[in-house]
Length: 330
Image 1 (cartoon, rainbow, N blue to C red):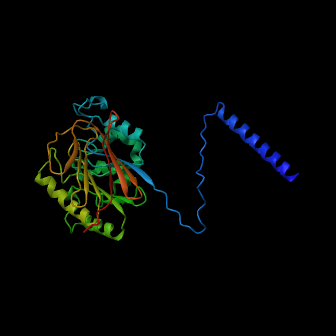
Image 2 (spheres, helix red, strand yellow):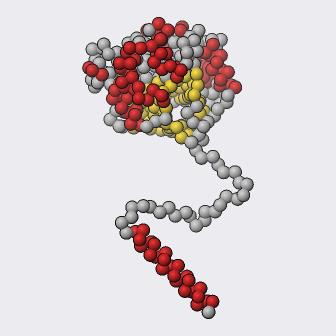
Image 3 (cartoon, rainbow, N blue to C red):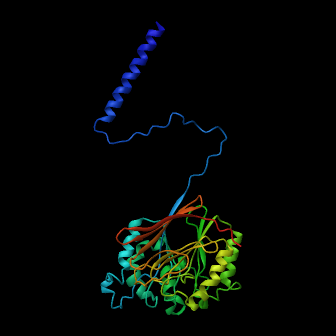
């Protein structure tokens, strides 16, 4: 009797299951996730691995033309000049977490009026996500006053423009000023270098990105330029001593990626819209592009790895690759 009743109950349950399955398959677009049969609850007291956190950065520099430029054309530019508005639309479409600028954000003199008329129209919509650094053109206005007023506290202060932010667990970005003459120097004893050394040594983090304007290595317009190298070299040395993994720069109006030198991978991201400078060859240059406007996108993972891609105005993803933090410092 009990066996008969058990069989009856099982048959009823099977019938209900078949009915529900049939109902779910008619006119339904929902997917059902089936857990593997071997899945089991973690033992009591077991430590679960922390999920891998992601953060996406858009990196760009040498951006907005002066409204008085003959190439400005109402802000839309032409195929080779003043494409800041198109680049701004690209940045917004990428839905990144943060925007890092590599300087010369506003031409020709970085004045506040020009920032409001040109840069703000292009990229003002992501200003609250932006962490900028100044270029040499910002200092064409005394004290880079337009830059500091436009970006406010995100730019630091005229006396202390260096600062740091944390885009994801295990990552930090240090933002520096390579206009050394304006900030008390860049050598090892300068206020900026001392701050950087202290920050990197007292607050150890697995992965670090540094952003400043002038590149130490370039295959472009400033290749071998003694003045540019003179301001970039001390910052590079300080970054390498402190274990920085990635350096992003502008100044040369093109995109470049160099093989790891010392412990650092360098990107030049000067493709924010102003114009292009031609590229030649250079030792350790792994990829270069002097024809497309666009942004470097860095996808940072909290496990110490990252992805890089140069995303162009027409949506191409060039120079796609991966890397991992590994600079032990000196």
